Every structure is written in structure tokens, then in C-alpha cells.
Image (cartoon, rainbow, N blue to C red):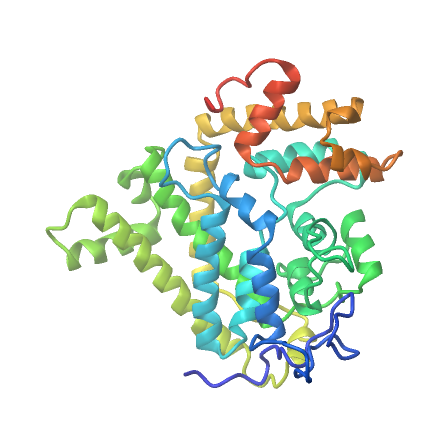
Amino acid sequence: MTKRAPYAADPQAHGGREFRAPGADAGGAVRAATKGETRGPRTDFQRDRDRIIHSMSFRRLKSKTQVFIAPDGDHYRTRLTHSLEVAQIGRVLARALGLDEDLTEALCLAHDLGHPPFGHAGEAALADAMGRYGSFGHNAQALRTVMRLESPYPAHDGLNLTWDVLEGLAKHNGPVTAPGWAVAQLDEAFPLGLGSWPSLEAQIAAVADDIAYDNHDIDDGLRAGFLTLEDLLEVDFLADQWRVVEKRFPHGARDRLLRELIRDQIGLMVNDVLSHTRASVKGYGSVAEIRAAGRQLAGFSPDMAAHERALKRFMYDRLYYHPEQVAAAARARDVVARLFAAYSQDAALLPAPWRADLPPDDPARARVIADFIAGMGDRFAIRTCEEIYGEMPQGLVNV
């Protein structure tokens, strides 16, 4: 078992919770059980992970786009399966580096909770609709989801996660120097130190996300027929690894070799992150020093980062901006725009619980409408648009 690193986040000394829970000390950490109390064996970071897994927003990820909008096949990835794959990679990295696996896993599982239907196409449509009301972004929406929208507890709004999880969600991609309205409002209620770098656990969650979608989106693109082996071989990094796989399995079936290629790439990226991060954190002795470092410490080496950027460019050119994908994204944006317009013009179209809490004026009113749409799955958004407008959005899916 890897020794716990001195710069690992400590579940016994975290930054507290926004709302003090029964049995918690002043900082929010759960005290040992006293007579008549049952606190259980979990750390606070394990509790956070479990709260995320049991949330409705996490379950709804099964119906949200990863690459393909409302795909017909069961084998394509969704935001839910992607989040599970990110968590698996994140746990491996955290364990090898001596970091807190539970905090890393919680961040990996929660990082996409704010994604609206239809992936980045839906996000772009909501950002356009919310442009005059403080805009919209899935990272900020993830924070809003766990702090205000998911409210299973009688004493407070939100899941009341630890500061460390909220900080990681807010700035896993680095310091937030110009927070939008949603993040600024939440930061005012529970300051998250937006100007510094986050914990290594949060940095690892971010790079695990890159590793997962860089490689697994290739798998889905091949399955859909949007990518071919010949396309992949145009990328030097992929071509080099393909030759290694062919040499190792000279008589293997092509589809199995392609899966082996993806596994090999994940392994190469993981090992590169471990090597580079270990070198970067030498001399650091606490999580506070990590946050004060002023730079990203966990990530790819310069050489691997260059390969990863080339891979991303290839994926945008050949998959994400494939003509069929672009056409589907345009139709998806239209669905989201029409839903926002309908609810803005006639609040009676909203479900009763949402109408009851709808503020009378913008921007708060628009924000609640965006919250409702952001929570939809792909197929639910399509069906709802059909119910409101009396016609099925063409070219997306037959539900």
C-alpha cells in the first residue's frame, strides 16, 4: 500500500461544511460517536462521495450526451459511464501518488453534474440564452447543483459537501479569476479561495477527465463509423502505438487490437502523469503548500502534453466537428433555445414545484429556468419540446 503523502488532503482536517451538521465540530469534521449516536466508519470525504452517488443529478447523467446525442445503441458512453471511467483513472493516480482516493473519486464523479442535455451543444445554447443574465457554464452549474439544487436534507439546501470537494469542483482547471454570477454568489455564501490552485486531488481529477475522454471518445467514434483506423494512423502518437500493438499481436483481430491500442494509450498517459507529477511535487510538504505553489503541479509532461493537444485537434477535426455531429448539435441547440423561450414566456409550462419557487424577476427567474433545463436528459428534453410545440425536433431521435 502506498504511503500517504504529506501533501494529501486530510479528511480529518478539511475546510468544513457550509452548514454545520449534528455531531460535527466547529470546522465541520464529524466527531467520534458518543453514546446514542451512530456515525459509522466513513470519513467525511467518503460521505461526500456517497452523497454524490445517491443524488438524482448523478442518476440523470445516464441520459445525457457524452459524444453522441441520445444514441440508439446501449454501448455508447453517456455522461454517467464517462464519470465512472474518470473516477477509475482518478483512483489509480491518487493511490499511486499517496493522495486521498475518496476526495479524488468524489471530484471525478461530480465533475459533470452541471452538464445540460446534448453535451456542449446544449451548454452553448444555454450560455446564449443566459448571456444577459450572467451566462451559463457546466462547471459553475455543477457547483450550483451540489450547493443549492440537490436538497435531500430537511435542515439546509444542497448536499453540504466539504469545502475541499467544493473548492475542487470550482477550480479543478485552475484559479478562477473572473467568476460568473453563479460562482460569485456561491463563493460569497461559502468562500472557496478561488484565486489559488486547488489540491492535488482536484488537479488529478482534471487530468483523469482528459485521459478518459481523449481515449474513450475514440472508441465511440470507431463504433459509430465516424473514425477509421486509417484516420487514427494520421496522428503520429497513435500510429506509433498501433505499430507496437501489431507487433505484440501479429494475428489479432482488428477490433480487438483497436481496444488494445486504447488501453495502451491510457496506460502511457497514466504513467506519464505519475512520473511528471512525482517530479513536480518534490519539496512540497503540505496541501497548503500545493495551493500556494502558483502553478499546476499534477499533469502531463511537456512531451505528452504536446501529443495530447495533437490528439484533441484530431478529435475535433474528425469527430466532434464531423458534418453529422455538427448538424445534430445545431438541432440540439434549437431544442434548448425553444425550451428556454417557452418557459420564459409562459411559466405555467414548468412543473408545479418549479413554478412554486420561480422568482418574479430576472436574472433570478432566468437562472431557475436554466436550472430546470440543465437537469433534463436528452430524450426528456426532446419529448418536452415536442409536447410544447406539437412537433418532434427533426433528425435527433425517434423516442
